Length: 107
Image 1 (tube, one colour):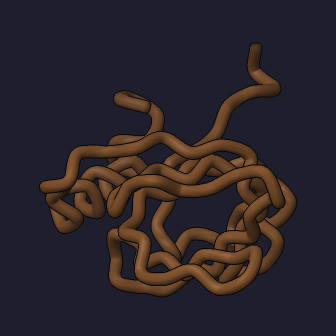
Image 2 (image 1 turned 180 degrees about the vertical axis):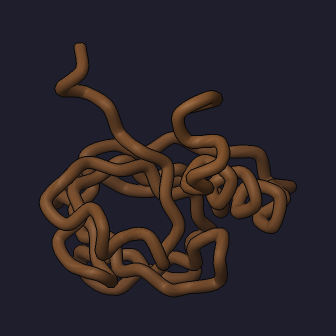
């Protein structure tokens, strides 16, 4: 089961997870060919590479995918989120999970 862990991140954390599976809560900005440009909870833009058979159907989603580099992810799956997602709140939660004061005791 440990092989299926996917850490929730924002765009600033992507560099720490190149080659690994992550969860990126985000807002879809636009589509172009087989990619989607999204805005992460911290305001950074990330390119999501989409498989040919997959589409994203909601404005706010959680992208589950493999980090290619500091600004792009290969989509493995997608979870539709509420249309009124509080991006600042979600980003605050992400930042707390990386805070060393809480990492070992809470997460």
